[in-house]
Length: 467
Image 1 (cartoon, rainbow, N blue to C red):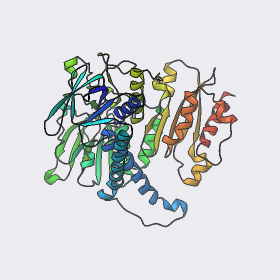
Image 2: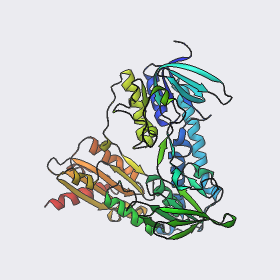
Image 3: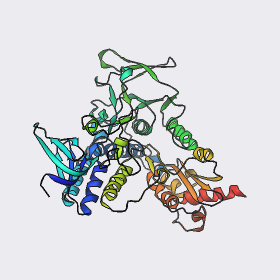
Image 4: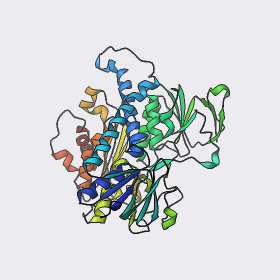
């Protein structure tokens, strides 16, 4: 095989491209990964999943310092973090992740090409380096895994480039720690940052045009999270859109005017209005690959585009835009191409983790979806303030909600709010994926006291309601 020819070329340096590349090399294939930046990791490592979760952990640690009296400890009270303190852990983690990712590519014999990848035809990709030099590589298959960018609505005249208004990617270039911030959009990203900011002493105003935050969640979970946000001091404005962004003199802030006529003044603004696929200047139109109105590549159930040997996965194809699912998709693509028997996973069967404070994690359909499907279901709930381990640790906010099919006893969904929700969901995920019964939780022994004990209490609650 020619030095410039590969079995598969992945365009992008994030989780989807990495896992596809690694899986393909494990199957004996020659693989190239093209990344436009000199570092690997994509948005996941540099301005998305990893840094935002590092900020969440710093915010959680700061909050817990100021709650130390729960354990009878006397520690100095810190009124507010500095910007450097807030960003310190994120910077450290990003640097480490860059090193780990690069080492994984080397260990797995993946050829890394730095430059801009552009598809010339179904079997040729051009790479332009930082000096403008171009080189063409041949390949049997192509994977487009270029990620996404924050959506900037063109018709709303939002003055982004002024150091006062940011999108979620630009947030890490923030120059000054605000005393107040407006978050426009109460989806996953907006809600995560709203709680992160509020727990480090920043006044947060959270706006969304829908009638509730995180509207895709089980309503009971969404409403409970609304309560925790309000208790943390977040001011929530649902059914609102921003009609005007008025910059105050001398950079003193932004005055927002809502569709209800309200005027709110804040130091800074975070726009979180969804994301669009990174598809510009990739040569997609040259080979006739379809994209939708969010610039997301349209694929089939095997992540193939309408050009059979060109695949796409990760955030560039849209929902669910989770790093965990992107990794799965990348591995799936390599197996589908090279005969590795990929395992299809239905959207009901993968977990969703939302890194708010407290966290939210779900697996399976919501109660509202089960009603729409006409399923005869049962519900069990356990509040963490009744769980011994939560009382010991002080993590008593939240609940475990279990949904199950009454005729078959099968657990269909688990929905959790807790500081440890994204870890606790693993047990529920196993039972859902393995089609286990609700009685699993009541008939087996769990360590005591543990947060996992909430599953047992929720199951007993469900069975009690059947009597």
